[in-house]
Image (tube, rainbow, N blue to C red; front, side, top):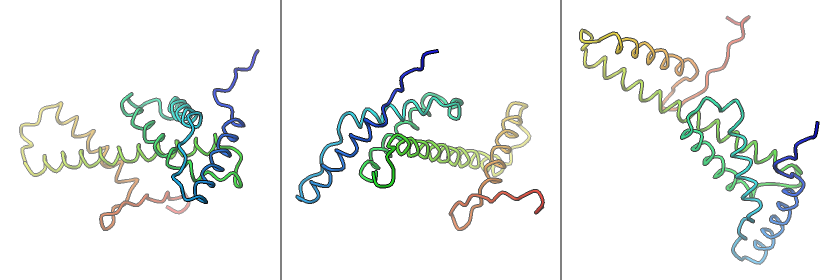
Length: 175
């Protein structure tokens, strides 16, 4: 069985990053404007971000949602190019992949929070209206799903002084 060629050559990307870092260093020393990001680095970032979204972890999301995740990841990767330190790592592929992964997770968390806010507002509207008599079966089922989603979100996060904190998992023997 013949091995497929990798879609990205890490050694080549590392060389590009070293050259870019040297140009960046020269521009800082000469107090000139920073160099443009080379096209090959940009293409590599696009490849990393667009291929990572195909992992099974992100397969259940809509195409629009996935596009937002990819665009967030690309922006974060471009913003972090200057922070790549070849003294710490010689693997820019892993560096950009981790940045993209974290961007995907942040987008998912933001969207879950927005969904929670929408559902909580819906629930409050129903409670404040007090019109429970005109509920049909569909509205009742939707309300149960809404309540479950709200409880799920609230079980994972604690709200204190308008700030959100992730709940710590309780070990079984501590219960």
